Image (cartoon, rainbow, N blue to C red; front, side, top):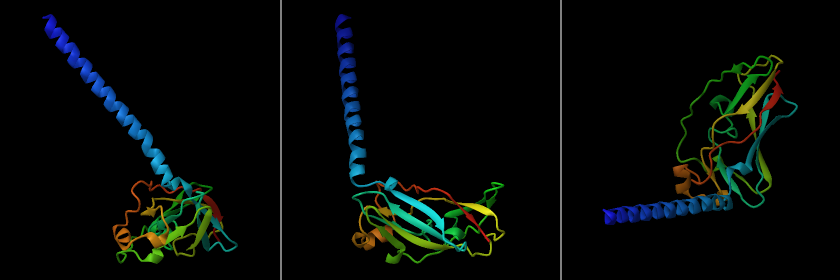
Amino acid sequence: MAARTVIVFLLCSISLLLVAHSFGALTSYSNMAPSSAHEQGSTQDLKIRISSDSSSSVLKVTLENKSSTQTYSVLTWDTPLDPQAMNLGALTLEDVESGDAIPGPGMKINRQMPPPRDAVVEVRPQSTTTRDVNLGLPWIPSDGKVYRIQTQGSWKAVWAKPAAQISDEDLEKMAGDSHLSKDIHSESAEIKLE
């Protein structure tokens, strides 16, 4: 009986050691992963700013790269940088006073694949790129009220490299770099629509 107890004790001890060793290996791996992803960049560096000039019929959407070292290339389809962003729902409107959302058409666009190269925007470290979005659409109010414009959705594809380094295969897959988050980071803006 004593020999059986010793064997059970040894087996349990060895099992615990193996589990502890495996857990340590997993912890070490998980500690390494964020630093390697950080070295390759993060979409946390990409910020969307929304503004309007003197004309309330044009919205300026600016993509800012806050990284000091990393260039990013972004597929603009179905994002706030898409010229059809309002019709697609990538930008939404809300009446500031009432809080009511203004429903858009929620268009779906059939696009020719693969995306053309001009659908990719490159933004170098510590720089910006700006696109104009038309607010003069039939469904958008022009009643002199103030509306909040917000972003919605996620990046379709982001690459942590210059646009010239994106291959035809990269464009066909539209997957971007798998380690990059697809979240769009932005602040809302208020605009008076007349």
